[in-house]
Length: 151
Image 1 (cartoon, helix red, strand yellow):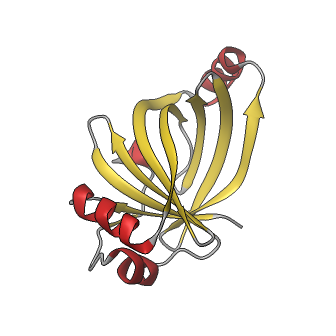
Image 2 (tube, helix red, strand yellow):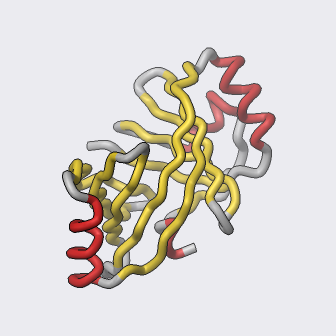
């Protein structure tokens, strides 16, 4: 099962240099809009709009990680947004700009989130603080254990 480890990013230029040093593969840029819906604590339901495509993401927080329960494509984003808004209500909406990399069997995203700041997400089967230390020389990271919608 895919897990996310999120940390606040304080020195993007240093991380970019380390990604280059370790041979991480640049995968591109992603500009997205995330619409979060009201959910019980520890659960996340959102629609992600990216390049005209839309996906519903369902996640849950577990021991400081976010686990993906599902990532499903949506044929009609406007209908799905309206349906979920009616059922749950919109919590908030966020614009994100990401630089995406891959290394070993992991995705590494450097995110600029409007009004929140910069974050790094390590995405894979077993992300850990130790990997961040070993690969990117990040010591004592500020781990984010809440949804971006709750920050």
